[in-house]
Amino acid sequence: MFISPLLAKLYVKKSLKNTAEGFEFRLRNIIDSATLVAFGPVTVDGAVFGPGLLSLTQEGATVRGDEVAASNPVAIRAFRDTLVGVRGNPLGPGAHKITVEGITLDVGRITFDVKDSVDG
Image (cartoon, rainbow, N blue to C red):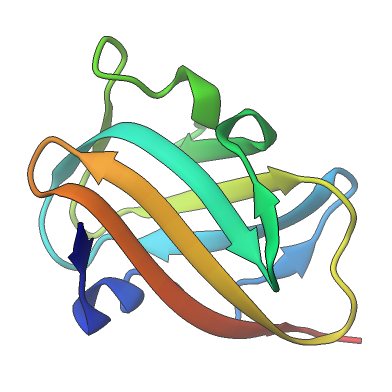
């Protein structure tokens, strides 16, 4: 498993927002292009959201987290934003700990933690 403080820099600070379906945040790949072959879970304050509750939107195209697979990889291009949508209850105002997990062809399993806040 690849865990690095550098990976936390993928998270766009102050991007955490509630939506009609749950909440969302942005990732910006500042490292190098990668190929995602699995996405999820995303854990927020200990609550686990599996791939079926996640979506990735890049340049107007959306794929569900449970559709990301070796047979259906997702290219994560360098210096482009990816909007991560999470279906579930909206988050309460204040700080939240977010853990993002996935698997890339390039480095294998990745995971990183960040903290962000929802405005009240």
